[in-house]
Image (cartoon, rainbow, N blue to C red; front, side, top):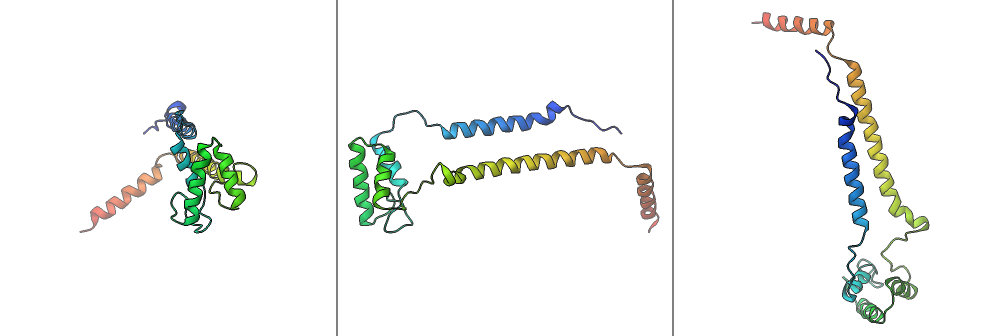
Length: 163
């Protein structure tokens, strides 16, 4: 009985295809659709990223609190006045500290964005190495030896002899 080994290309092709697909999904997921956003879209996006100062468990988009209604009106007024999303968020943050629902994308806050990606890559690499090691150990182990075959034959004879 011979062991059939596949070529390295055939073994790594599925992994390479999976890496290309994952990279494509990540790139497409981080790009905007390119269509210009309307003021209504901007207002909703800003409202979803600002925490209600009163209830703390909801964004101002979801909250029915009076302060949230006031902040929604403020956001709509500022968008109509031509201010940027970041300027509006900064103004709200200066009036109500701790209301931003967006983690900072620089400094220590960047770890919130980076750590899950790095952990996923490290885990995938560790799994790949484990699978390669297991496949090599299985290939090195070879097939059954003559002693193994004799042991199985003796066991089968023993079962055939029983009534």
